[in-house]
Image (cartoon, rainbow, N blue to C red; front, side, top):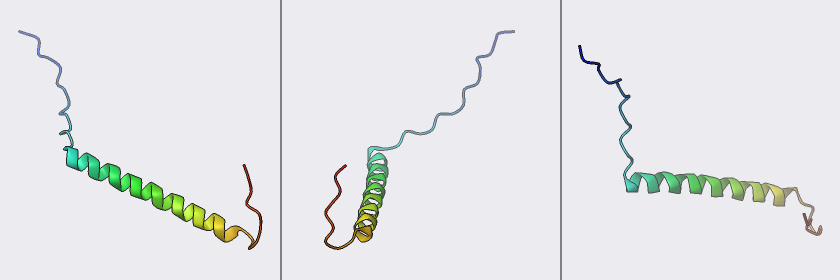
Length: 55
């Protein structure tokens, strides 16, 4: 009897360049929306005429 090689799990098909770009764009847009919402919430929390805080 000859030894059989261990079975390998099937590889996931590689994403096409277009699919990778689409996923990256979607993630980027989601991140930018979160940033814009956070900035808007921060602005809404400030008192009118108050000096901006420096970190």
